[in-house]
Amino acid sequence: MAINLVKGQTIDLRKNDQGESFDLSSVTMGLGWDVRKKSGGFLGKLLGGSQEDYDLDAVAFLLNSNGKVADTGRTASTTDGRQVALYQGDVVFFNSQKHPSGQIWLTGDNRTGAGDGDDEQIVVRLDSLDAKYDKIVFLVTIYQGRQKGQHFSMVENAYIRAVDARGKEIARFSLSGDATYNGMCSLVFAEVYRKDGGWKFRALGNPNATDNFVEILKTQYL
Image 1 (cartoon, rainbow, N blue to C red):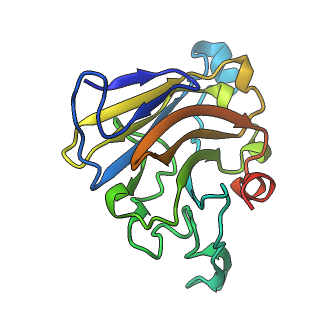
Image 2: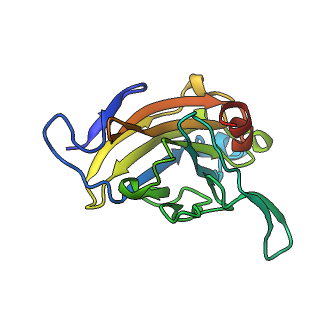
Image 3: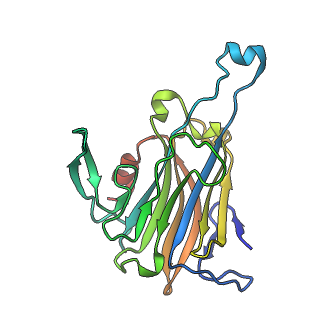
């Protein structure tokens, strides 16, 4: 039975307190969210009651034993001529969806959050991840949130969950937007780290005003 975590709680990913064991050869970190609907009726329409699309992006930082991203990758050109930084480094995001090791990848970029189930997923093969990686931090940012006036107090039923290779949900950490998240456009949601030969999962839920994960990377993880 999956464990529902509270902020700051830490659990073992391999085995829970009920004696249930999990297969960490492939762990899916699923993220989901709903956008709070605007009020309906005449007044809602008058004030712009149509539902906005929120583009929330899942990001993962792979950290060394010093808690830092050691390889920031390189700059590459896309097919349309744009320059993309942090390409094929220890940051997995929408412009670099698969880590060079092949052990962690983003399954795709959901630009609206529409539909049931996980809106974005990051898959990591914890059992075969190189020992030089001591921790993985998972973030969610609202693309152009500052520009569009979108922030996490407008997002509800947000969650991150860990699912093992057999499809068994290990743990889930949920939160709903409130005044605490007003003006906050990014969220350091959770982290997975090595401990005593195994892996731990910690629920974080730390908000940040920036909508650019690179700012968090520069100030905390370089």
